[in-house]
Length: 432
Image (cartoon, rainbow, N blue to C red; front, side, top):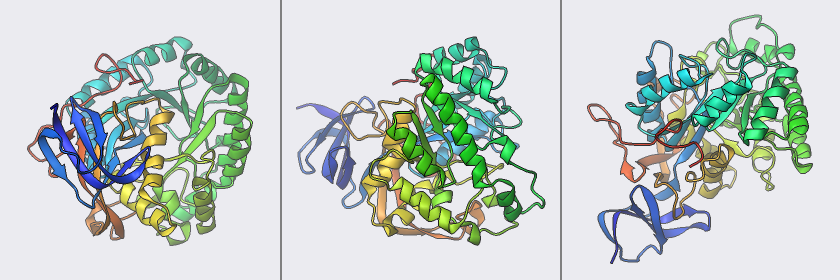
């Protein structure tokens, strides 16, 4: 009988075939078998979760890892441990804000070095596109292993990545279409933004109206129709953009979008005006907008808003990667959705966006990136945690995380990060 490295059993295992009792066998860091729950399997280690759910690890696209004052290595260590504690097993790093910004192979190499010895999860990278990016720059970054690219139409990457005008956007998308590489776009249009009149969140909301996202999306769609490039708006907060997305998707234009839990869970009417923990770009919008955004996410076609990422921006925006899964589950459960929906939004679809074929699913041949999630448990977010969920009671608790079949410790102090893969460069190519 074949002996596996690890077997995890759960009466609520989420797989592409459905949700139910199953045993997942791991060998060499990959899923080697998915069988019936009670099938005897020889293994070195076995865990029976009972009623606690077993989910595919989340793939979090467009994450900033560095808070102000942290070195790159410290940023990777802190953010990836928080990610793993929240059920994220793959972090796809935004090119900015970062020090240095990932706009060429030299700066990518610096991030590879920082991440390789510090990270608790898999790490993949997005290459930054600026008005100065040349075709050679983009080709070199792709050859070095970036999973995709990212740009801004306003100040989404400032001061590191200047906004693209329509000429540079079209040229970049033409190059990326030839590479079959996705472009993530911060799509607020600079011409539709104004300087906030006051320092609070209400003034930020007034200065960044929904029409800025709508106008930016129209620019992205025009470039995608002209070039055939795959574009992914990250993040989308203005629900009025959903109808435009649905229309162009029905015509075959390859533009998709992701949103964030704070746009789905937190209405602007309840945001404390002076609290910087809620300050993000685009801003948190009205309760009516929040409801319409849920409607877009729940659209059965899956063509409108297809995925959810944390939008993690420690120190410069919302920093809540650890609470993405519980916050989303708390809100989704109230709307009658199940764990299969949440896993599709946070794991399967994000992995598809950036071409990480071995991620986001519990299936034979995929990486053994797994999460034990107690959907019935409740947990208070510590008041001193910071972030927009501080002091709130959330439903669902991550009780275990495995990266390539190896458990991430719940308390990392004094323990070296696990061996893992860093996407970009010689360790592992971006398309695996």
